[in-house]
Figure (tube, rainbow, N blue to C red):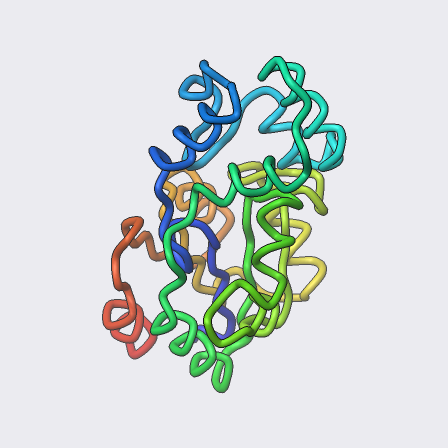
Length: 206
């Protein structure tokens, strides 16, 4: 019996547009960003930011070095936000309904730039931050690990005291879903951009 639901953020709750993000970083001056930026797992300083090895300010400075000019925090933040399309309120309302019957958590590979937006009033047109839609957020840069490393799953399981077999893990990344299965979670892999509400309702009614 499912008692808990763990959502990925980008690609599930909010649709991702990698091409738009690539163009945003190119405008900053990062010509080779296409080799550095990935939907599911970053490399170099992008990965170090998501793992919490670089602070937001350290990342800004190192990104500026790569771009050949100083960057502001706001410029850097806006480039990161290029990843995301408009927030779908129907999905958020659905998640609020789920919270009446399930514990809801978010497990995300992310960074302080994205979360300064997502956990603020500008996240949605309802002026509700992301943390209003879940019991707790588990963010890679705070935990010190990124999916699909088992350590980030173990941290979440131990912190919120859940049983994987009683937990539905929802993620659009195949490697993340695979490790979720190996760790004993029930899993659901919607495609980025999909409206997964009906399919999820069917899964939960089984």
